[in-house]
Length: 434
Image (cartoon, rainbow, N blue to C red):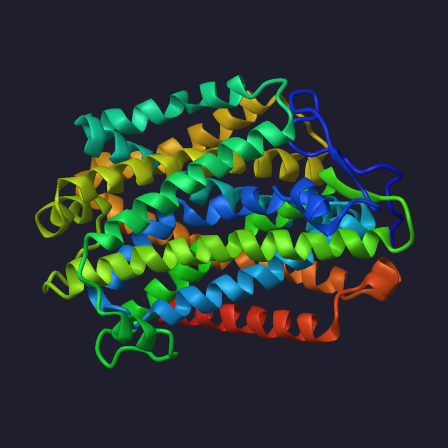
């Protein structure tokens, strides 16, 4: 057993982003909810990154709406795991990285840190490729130059220096709204068969192309339940606390559940919209091998018009930039929690982006622009492979009553989490052995 720290480490480069939100327990429920809302958005935006686009677009073009149920169940699983991560942070005052470092010793700490860093780099590869594609689609910038331009998103992080968490959350909310509105408008321009969409919510796998369906399903799972988001949520949620009166912690946990479910429900709907868009625009028209976001953009123009193509590019750029912000936060949380190393955010951003530029640039140099689609899908599969290593300590600790006391997670939640853990592990093993 390990002892709790006397104070929680403030998330996201404490010297550069200021402020926590304290909530008066005597305020009305609506006022408390408005004050609390925000941490879920920082997590949800990672569920809409370009990696999600790649897996959802290819799944929709190849199999129509048949894998829509994977998006739905992955979203529900993500809600459950993110609520467990937030519970750990609120009850113990430690984020998942800090708690894992204290529980598993030096060797375990290094293993978990390396795994978490791999997941962040894999995610950042998707942001690099997504933003580069957006630059190409919107401004005609060659893809190789677009990859190079993504290095300058460090300026965005520098622009946040000295800002409060509320400002960061407002920026992310604006980017999420941009993505959601763009997809709503694109769906409105298409002729979608909604009864077929509803049928896609029933679990089933295609009779043909089973191997490819499993790869894409794992990619959807990895893109939806990102390992580093568990570390992120357990930290940023500590910027919220209900104070005063009895049951303040229980009130905080309730508000957290609402914030998490509402935010991730929005992310799930956006991911579902991407798959439905691909099914309506491509699969229904006979384009069953659209595995590249650029191809999707070019094909959607004659099918839904120039406006839809423009909205597609704008949403892609917003998705890449928003995920960049939260990836920086997560990287700082993980480095600080596991290694007790705290560096300025722009330095953290430079390190992560430099490591992501290597595989992205090498893939494009080796195979050209056709490498983008496979790189995006396999970056999300890599996230799925890393996920069990983040889930293991989370499930062990949130179900530990010696650590969590009366606020340990319900047994049904832990049992469901372990079922999901073994399911993902088995699917990963099948993929590796197959």
